[in-house]
Every structure is written in C-alpha cells, then in structure tokens.
Image (cartoon, rainbow, N blue to C red; front, side, top):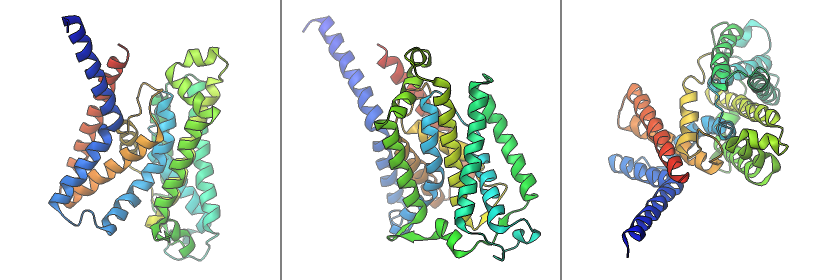
Length: 338
C-alpha cells in the first residue's frame, strides 16, 4: 500500500469514526451513565425511580421537541422557561377565577382543566408568534429577541400572580401532572405523543423539509421558493405552544402555578437538543436525538442527586457537557466539509 493510499485509508477511518460517534455516541454515553449510577446505588433502576426521572424529563422534554425545530433553523429561544411560567399562570387564573380566593388552596371557582390547558397553550403560541415576527420582520437576532422575552414574560408572570402562586386545583386538573394512564404517569404519555408527532412532522411532511432547508442554507431555500420568514415564525410558534403545554403540565404536577416556575429550563432544554446531536449551525439533527439528550440530562441530574452532589455543581457539570457537545459538533462539521 502506498503512502497516499495509507493516508486516504486513515482519513476514511477517521471520518467513519466521527460519523459513528455522531450517530451513537450520545446513546453510548447514556448507557455508561446508567451503569455508573446503578453501580453506586442499585435502587437507581427501580421502577419508581425510572418513572421519577421520565416524569421530570417530560416537562422540559416537551419544550425540547419544539426547540429542536428552532435550532434546526439556526435559531435559539432563551425565553422558554419564562413563557412556561406566564402561560401556566394565565391558565391557572382561568381555572381559579379572578377573585382573590384563587391564591388559596380551595377549589371553589374551578372552570376545568380544558380551559386552563387551552389558555396556557394559546398564551405560549402568541408569545412564540411575537418572537417569530420580531425576528423576521424587525430583523432582530433571535438571541436578542428571546433574551428580552425571557425578562418580559417573567415580569408579566410576577405582575399577574402578584408575586405569589395560584394553587389548589381540582382532581381532574392535577391528574395531568400526577395521574397515570395504563400504569404510566400522564406527563410521560404526553411527552411520548408530542415527540412522535414532532418526529413525523419533521421527517415526513413538506414543512419539515422546509425547516431543514432553511437551516442548511436560508438564502438558497428562499431562492427555490420557500417562504423562509413563515417557516422561521412557525418554529417559534411551535416552541411557544409547547412551552405553554409544559407550563400546564408543571402546574398540574405541583398543583400550583408559580412565578419562579421554569427557571433555568432554558439550560436543560438547549442542552437536551444540542447533546442530542442537533447542530447549532442549523440543518442537522432530529427529535430522536433530542429525546435521548433529554433523558440523559434527567439521568445525570437524578444520579447526581442520589450521590448527594449539590445543585450548584449539577449546573457546572451540565454546562461543561454543553460546551463539549458544541465543541464536538464544530469538530464534526469541519470533518464533514472535507
């Protein structure tokens, strides 16, 4: 074998290794994490703990499905935690009524979970629509738009809730956060349905193909007839709507809509998407990887709690993992372009 052939063979092997890690690396890392935490505590894989992990994951996992669409277009949404809180508070106001009694633990004015869910989803949808329009029509970078939205919606939550929680929902409302369906916690079922629908839309519909096209090359997509502004606005609408749904689920789980709900969810959501293999440069990724990424974050947090690692250190570890994931994405992107 000549030297040139050897270099070509080594280069081909290197690209193959990178491609393998891109496809299966996150899954391998998840398995290793599970094995490690199980070795530290054999109750880690108990059914109760598995459901605890997946129930926790389901709240920010629902938002992560929407964030996948946004990041696939090379965008970002830093406001999802604040939108979650505001949407949940709006839904709670509808459920409990406008009187001061809505801050009590009684259930005297409940109008039903359906009205609360619809309100929360609609509020999230409108918030996402505003972000999308500001990004496409005003030409403000999505980072700036959603950073401002993060502050605006959190402030609106404090104003609406007067700094306090709204609690004391009826059983039908709480069922969405604490109930079970076929022996599985309801939030997990909702997350599974959202993830499946998100995957189908992204992979098998014209809209999904447009999302990938805009992320790969926005100008080229525009030149072939794709309404790029509409696609970009739509992905922010999707993540806003799912943030509202997650807000409803969280308030049902806690039996309380709180002004501090969803704080730091931006970190978990973006980490789930990026760790799951969706490129921050746009055009590469999918819902399957996001689901695995969300579960990995949940396993990591739960395992660290079991090992009595402080919450501050958990944030440091997750932050480091995000940086490493982006670094690997940049490295892989440079190899794909060769």
